Every structure is written in C-alpha cells, then in structure tokens.
Length: 567
Image (cartoon, rainbow, N blue to C red):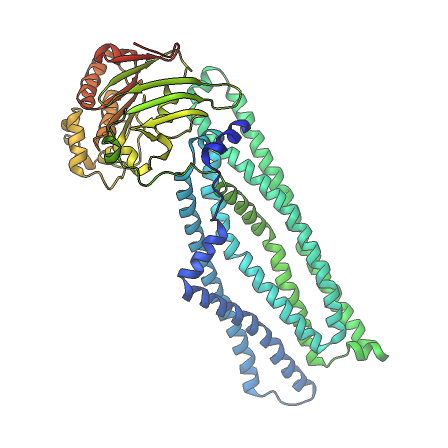
C-alpha cells in the first residue's frame, strides 16, 4: 500500500499545505478583531489584578503589626482587588471558550474542503474510521487546547514571571532562590510533556483503529458468522483497546505524579524562606523582611506554584490536543488532486468535434507491482453505445474511474471530447457524466435529494422530469410527502432503487452515460423494467457499459479487454 501512495503522489501533484491550525487562528484574529482585543485585554487584566491582593494584604498586616488601626477603605480595597481578579478570570474563560469554538469550526470547515480535493487513492489507503476520528475526536481536543490549554498556559507563564519580579523586589534572596528553582521545574515539565505526547499519539492511533473496526465488523457481520471469525474479530478489537489502555495508563501515570512533586517543592521553598529569614547576620539581611512582606511573599510563592501546578494538571489535555493537531496537520498535508482547468466547460467540449471518449496507449496500476491496464486504446464517437467485456479484475471499473478523473494513468492519455479527464473541473462533470453503479448509495435526506444530491443547479422540475423518464414518478407521488418524503432503504424495492440511480445520473442531461453492472442483482421482471428505463435514458447519449445482458438487449459495439479488440 505504501508503494501505491508514493505512486499516486505524482498523480496528485503534491500540493503543499497552506492551511492548518495557524491559518485558522490567523483568520479568526483578522475577522474577529473585537473578540481578539477583548481576550488580550482580559488576559492582561487577569495578570495585573492577580498581583494586587497580596500587596494590599502586606499593607494591612504591617499596620496590624505596628499597632495601627486598619483603615476601612484598605480592607474594602483588598476585597475589591479579589473581586476584580475573579471577574477578569471569569470573562477570560468565556472569551477563551468562544475563541476555541470558532477555531474548531474553522478547522472542520477547512478539513471538509480538503476532503473534496483529495485523490481517490487516499480513500483506498486510509480506513474510513481513522479519517472520521480526525474530524471528530482530534478536532474536539483542539477546543480543549484553547479552553484549558495553550492560552491558559500563556496566562499562567505571564503570572509566574510577574510574581517572580515582585518577589525579587521584596526579597532578593528569595528571588534568586526562585530563579534557580523555576528553570528546573520547567525542564521537568518539558520531560513530562514529551513522554505524555508520545502516549497521546499512540492512544489516538489506537482509537482510530477502534473507530474503523466496529463499523467494519457490523458491515461484514454475516460473513464473520458464516466463516466463524467472531473470535478473530473480537481479538483484534481487544488488541486495539489494549493499545489504547496502555497509552492512557502511561499518560495517567505522569499526570498523577506531577502535582505532588510541585506541592513538595512549594513546601520546601517556603520552609527554606522561613529558615533563612530567621537566621542571623548577613543571611537575615539578605532574606529578611517584615511580617506583612512575609505574608505577601508566602501568598506570592503559592501563586507561583498554582499556575505551574495548573500547567501540570493540564499537560494531559494539552498533549492530547497537540497529538490531535499533529494528526489534523497530517491530514491537511495529504497530496491533493492535480489542478483542473477552469476554462474547460461542458458546452465547449461538446462543440469541439472530437471523439466523446478516447483512450490512447493507457497504462495503469494500483501499485507498482502489477498493471491493471496496459497499452489500452479505443475511441467512442458521440452517441455511440459500447459495452466493455472481460474477466473479473481485467480493469473494466478502473476505466470508469479514469474517465471520471478519479485517477491519472501511469502512461498514455484519457481524453473526454479532446480534454484531459483530470483537467475537467468538478462542477462540469455532472453535466458530462451520468454514472450508475451496481448498487444505489443513499444520502441522508428526502427522495428528491437522492436525485439532486443537494446540487443547487438541479431544480424540482429537473428531478421530476428525471423521475418521469425512468418511470418512477407515480411511485414517488404516492408517498406520504411525495418528493419530500425522507428516503430510507425500506421505501423502495431494489429495482426502484436502480431506477432512482438512473434518475440521479441523467438529471442534468449528461452527454456520457456510464453503467456499471446495474442489472447484476435484479430478477428478470425487474431487469426488464430497468432496461426499458435505460433505453430512454440512453437516447442521444454516448453510453459505455459493463454488462453482458445490457449488450444483448441494446446491441452496439463490444470491446473485449482480454484481447483489447473491438467487435
């Protein structure tokens, strides 16, 4: 699979990411200037207001120690300072939460846009559950990164620096002691961060495997039971859970031992300060302070370790978020499809006077070890009806993917009305191609939305016209809410689902119709009805199909991929 990914990088053009978390944040700052200004203002207010209560307390305690009555206004100022600090912290948390929600919304929007630009090879080499976990779990952790993470860490770091400055002014000895201890605590914190990041990344990978394994098991439950593979699937699931458990257990260990270490260091420093202050001679002069200053210093030392302890308490959330950001950036770094040509339009192509479809010496393989198609060439003129034949695995469905521009050939050319299939813009493809698969794929929504696929270019009249063409209009009109009825698998028979698929394919009157074994699973009566609908849908269109029965019913030319010949 890895060789396939490398091979497809040439196909995708390897578009370098110019997006990601930083670009989303930059966009929020540009478009939400008031929010950004308010956040910066409240952060500054929280830092400054946090320094005031101990300073007022120092003055009060010194007055009491000197026998001076405490002025009422001074006591009121102390409580006002506490209230102001609490107010700034509350507003800061609200604004951080709003900023985090805007960030996650922006990330999901950018990831959805990225999803539409990915080549088909991505969806083969990456399991759906892993991609879903990036959109859900990993993006959710980014909000935590802001709500209780990186911005909080910045605020706490500023608090620590400002408090250290005040401590140094009040007591040079204690200030020097704190300056010596703080870098050691920082280095310890970084060590814990690295270990926990590795654990969180391992957990994210394991969770992605679990998210993919569950729907895979449910989707294949009949086959699992038929071949008695329940234990095998259960053992695989248990293995993924154990991977996640070991990673979380390692992360929890570092999280649990960090806070006690910080608390012990806090107690040791306060004890050392008291011992040094009570000592005689130069040591007392170096560490000495008034009673009020000692009370303030003790409060400040506690305030130094509170944010450091808070940083430690949030390391797990932060590292989980960082792991999520790594995985999001990996997704956004995925190579994209080659650039399309915006000047190519359906109308211009159909007026070109060139063959509708032309394959010239096409080579293609899903990996470097085996070629599915080799030196394949054929031409279809506008309005021609052609059936592809050949053994299973010869590359019939692969040709459709090449025509739709989902893959690029390893060699040769795939041309649609003379234009490179990969260069045709996505918005033009539905006007050019109608694609009917072997099984109908429902989308969430109403019956009408099964036909329109939420395309604003498709009107209700277009959907109704397509349904009438395939003979499904009366059945839809008989539903409780007609075309507005929510669509489920139980609403239509298998044959009606195929008719719905044909209506979806022809709703914008495409020039080319691609039919992939659409009658393979139908009984003879239902097949006859579908074939009649196809005859109407195929009028005045170029049709290329994969179906022996359709060839026998409609005639036309047959191309054998086994021999690369035309009949």
